[in-house]
Length: 320
Image (tube, rainbow, N blue to C red; front, side, top):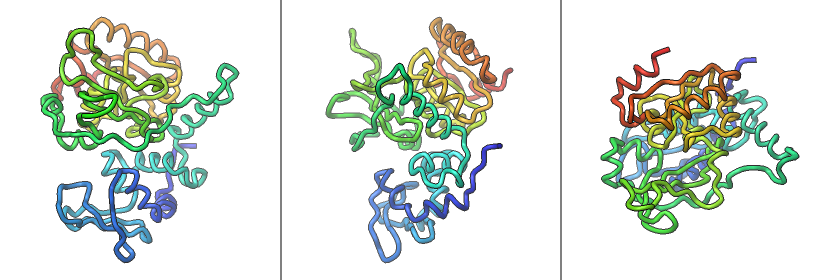
């Protein structure tokens, strides 16, 4: 049976839970009669002009004109197609999955979790635990703009400078699991770190091998691009190209299962243009080639997916 989603059933099931969706994004809407009213998340404003009607499962902003169902809201907030928004909502709330969605991304990820839980080689279910609450970050950092990131992209990915805590003095990059739950922040030193200070810092207990960066935004896409790092995936996503990052130069067994269960029919590997990147591309290709259509695209020496001009990126992805 092909993947399908009954959008009508999903809208009916989740419309009344619109308030929970708002809360998930940290949006403070107040009750006014039958509506929820707050600042629109899709444009800058000082006076609340966005109204949500949970009874109808509908929202409308009288400032910028954005409107639609809970599906439209999530799709616009995550900058993903409606189908991916539906998969994400089902993963978040787990409502009516038997009738609402048959999406390989969610099903396979959950099968993988179940397999891990019942494996004789593990005593507990392998997963990164969700975080709460999110960090308070400052998105107005020159380094992010210098890397070519727009204000919209910075907002979509929740990037910002961390002034306190374990990641103090670093750019915090939120990492989510396959269900869209925040599970960690990666701390990137803003620039080239001096001495032996590591470029990236991950929290204790977080396991990169259990997650693919940006997976929850692109699950369901027919073609996925696999890159090494955060900024490569962010750049491609901002160009409308579904991409995930392994957060390193190898693909774990858990990450492989996420890819194979994502709904993708083909994968393009776009590792960095250096010796380690080419070696990683070759090894990952050999790892996946018997299970899915895969090819590796060679970047110019020293290049990365986020440093190439847009036309060069698209040309690489068209080849083959």
